[in-house]
Every structure is written in structure tokens, then in C-alpha cells.
Length: 362
Image 1: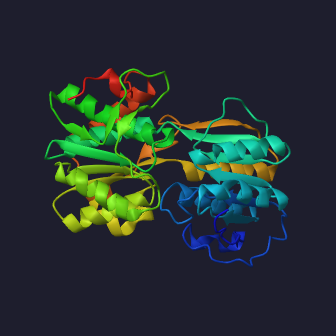
Image 2: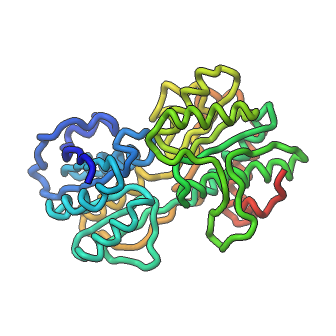
Image 3: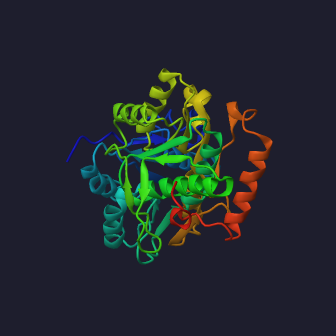
């Protein structure tokens, strides 16, 4: 087993420190409640400016309202998942939230072995329903589609690009939607914008996001993000969408350093809030409501209303969405904003497909 981070705790009264500021290891549980919410990160860590940080923010918000304590354990490697979960089971946490697709097997094993322990898992769904597990999933190909259309419309070079951290469904679903949006833009505008970094498989099972693409192999090595972004820029991409957690920070650094007019779309969270130093190059962010859904699961466990099952975030329920344009608000034409709103309505109504294979490749 790799190095295990010290358990970190945050009392409800100190929640204002924010998702990246949890440093106390001595805070005590509020006298109003003995409930403790516990979170296990994946290898990206608590300060990944992405899905781990978003999940922790949801824990903090729940704690602030419910006056209880939340804790987290970081997982430097995948070998830490099972042992970190086991540690929290032994501590009798009111709910254990696990973050990331790769934590599915460890979470399932623990939930099966401890049927009275409540769990929630971000970005994973099981083939069967467990009464003690709330799976939190997100149809990010829907807002990924909007991000792809926006990227194609704003590109000056006629080339956009994406890359992933790991080749897993919760990454490729984003990339799938992004490419679908680019292809739809081409179809509707008689254009030929090229999307680099992801080629969806032409024949695949329903609900699959199989294909071939550009992946760095991790969510942690920022230098790999720099290399991926540099490669895409060298091929002409002037809008880049990394789906790679902290690795995307390396991409942002490369784009900022290049200073050649290339812009980015951030992933999971609003990048102008989670990584404000790069806001000047963030056209938008393709987000999912991890914070809200985790908060809801933790509150349900604390209030005694928890039920196992599956939450799916969509454009319709606000579980996935494009973030504000921030510094680019005046640069995105009003007509394009109106088109994006229309596309969103069409996707919600089921009139517009977010499957890239519904449209011809450029």
C-alpha cells in the first residue's frame, strides 16, 4: 500500500475555508450532532480544482447547514482506495463518499460487506441497485455537446482539440459530446472544423463511449498536460478542452505561455472560480453538479432520509451545464448565445442527438 494521507477533518463552523483550505486535523464534532460525513478522494487529491474538490465542497456545504463534521482521506495511488474506505468504515462514518470511476470496485466490495454503512459514489453506476449506495452520475455528453459547438463557432483556425487523463467512460463521455457538438456545427453551418484528440468508434453498443484518442495516462502529471496542449496547438487547434483534472492545469499553463490566441474550456467545475489565474484563457467550463449532488446525498444521510439508488445529472435538471463566459462574455456573439440556448432546449426535448455518430465527420 502506498503512502496514506492523514485524515483531515473540518468542523461545520470552519467551512468558510473553502474546498482548497481544509488543513485542520483537530476540529471536534459539533455538539448538535455526532454525525460525521467522510470522503475518499481518488489519486487527483483534494485540491485537484476538479471533481475531488467539487465533492469536498458539497461535503462542506452540507456540514455548514447541518452543524456536523466532515473528513477526508486522500488516495495517492489506487492501492489506497480499499484501505481508506475500510478506515472510514471502522470510524463508523454516517456516510462515506467515494470519488471517481476507478473507485467503483472498492466501493462495491465495501458496500456489499457492510450493508448498514451508507455510501455515495461520484461518477460510477452499478449494474444493480444497492440500498446503501447512492450513485451520482452525469450526462456530460449533453453539455459537452454545447462546449463542442461553442468551440467550433469561436475557432479561427478551423481546428479544435480535446484530450483525456484516463481512457475511462467518465472521461470519454465528455469528449464524445464535444466531438458531437463540433460535427453538428459543421453540419448546420456548412463548415469543416476539425476536432482533434478523439475519434468515436463507428460501431458500438448503445450507451458506450468507445473510441480512440489522446490520453495522458493520469490525472496528476501537469507536465503531461503541457505536452498534450502543445501538441494540439502545433496541429493548429486554437480551442482546447482537457478532460484530465489537475493535468489540465498543465495545459492551461502551456496555453497561457504560448500567448498565441489559443483558448480553453475547463472541465467539471467553473475554472474561473477553481483556477482563477487562468480565467483570461477560459472561454467557458463544461461542468457537472458534483457539489450539489454530493451535498444532497450527505444531507439525506444526516437527516435519515437516505435511499440507495441513482442520481443522473442532465441539462434538464441542472446537473450538467456550461459555466458563464466570464472574460469572454463580450466576445461571444449574442447570436451564438441564442443558438446555444436553442440547442440546450433541443437536447432536453430529445430533438437533438448528442451521439457524434449521428453526424458526418469533417
